Amino acid sequence: MTDSFLDEHQKAGRAQEGKDMRDYISIEEAINSVHQSGDREVLAEYKAMKEEDMPTAVMSTYCTDCRAIVSPGMGKGRRGKPRTVCGECNSVKVSSGTEKALRSHYRLDK
Image (cartoon, rainbow, N blue to C red; front, side):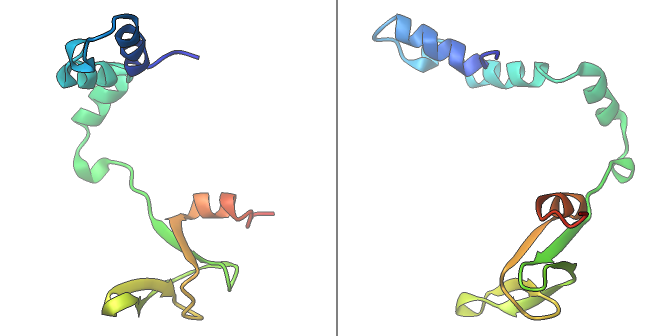
């Protein structure tokens, strides 16, 4: 398993006592090293892509009482704040996510 840039600098900081972590790496270097870890071709492709052509994820709601993916409803939570509830039984025991993730997590395909 490879170490992240932070692990390497933490080890270096432990090797020399009395030095602060900020002496070893600046936030700009850290951000640049994280950005360089991605595939440059994929990053260039996303930068060239128009916003309307980017992939989207449609969120779904799963009700644990109905044990199904349902349409969400709006209920009142604490102090009158809106809260997502099940659109069929008004239960507050709901989970949100993409339909594929919900089907996988709750094993609905089996």
